[in-house]
Length: 226
Ligand SMILES: Cc1cc2nc3c(=O)[nH]c(=O)nc-3n(C[C@H](O)[C@H](O)[C@H](O)COP(=O)(O)O)c2cc1C
Image (cartoon, rainbow, N blue to C red; front, top):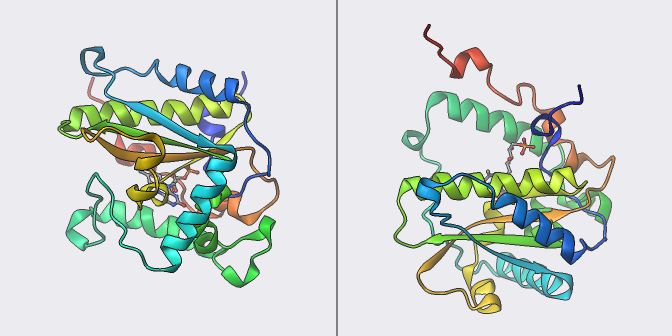
């Protein structure tokens, strides 16, 4: 039996300079629309930037980061204060940060060996970014649905040899996104997913391998009663 695509998908943070065919993008989004949702409400919308427009977004993102522009997301993110996270969540996040730090040397910055932070400031040079919105007055249940849609995007892409990075980083400056698509005021930009063909053999795409415990033990998150 071949390995499940759930196990072979990993976040990519360095991409080849290769566009994704528009028909593939449409297929990926159409597949992701198969996600389940509350009463089939389908609370998501997807806005995709690619080609020259994506390059302009990367430039403006870099400028916003470097000029310390006010960054905030339209859905309030969790803060890094101790009581926002459980002990287990802190432990998981620390494992990720430790692994990510290995490649966090901006001075290293040739295009195929960018440091983590440096790559972030350039939107990871993702050849395409899918911005996903949620109705502004949505409940937590719609957030569940939109999350399923977003994960569907990453899996549908992965099935086609395309790698993704779901990232808060992409949506820190709504002012660089909203006017591009004329996003209606009653939608909040919830997540961004970068897509492209992953560079091989670069540290930035091996962070998951560097994590000592990439996932909690199943017995620590599962309880079955018979
Ligand atoms: C809601 C969300 C926000 C994320 N934001 C970022 C981000 O801003 N920068 C980044 O490098 N990775 C980001 N990630 C990717 C996670 O770091 C990654 O999914 C996690 O470490 C697990 O690794 P894996 O996707 O390779 O399994 C985000 C993922 C999610 C789901």
